[in-house]
Image (cartoon, rainbow, N blue to C red; front, side, top):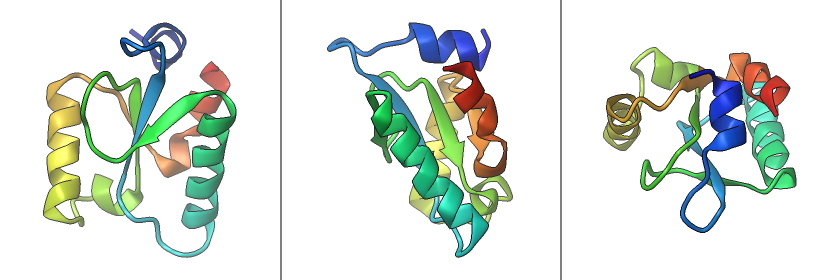
Length: 101
């Protein structure tokens, strides 16, 4: 299933779509993009979460987390997301998600 289909079709029991945000963005472009993505999700009624609990449409992840340079809790969130088959997208590549909705 593509991210487009998942974002448009997957909802939680109460009808809310959720996007998991994992990591702590660095200063500069990554931080600005992170903030913009959280706002983008909020503007579309998509809940931003930081723990991989319940139904999750996709995960937006910092570059450090993708490189394995993260806290144990971030590593656990990624492990849970991947085990559940949640698509994981780097902050830099999250335009794919924006284009899907």
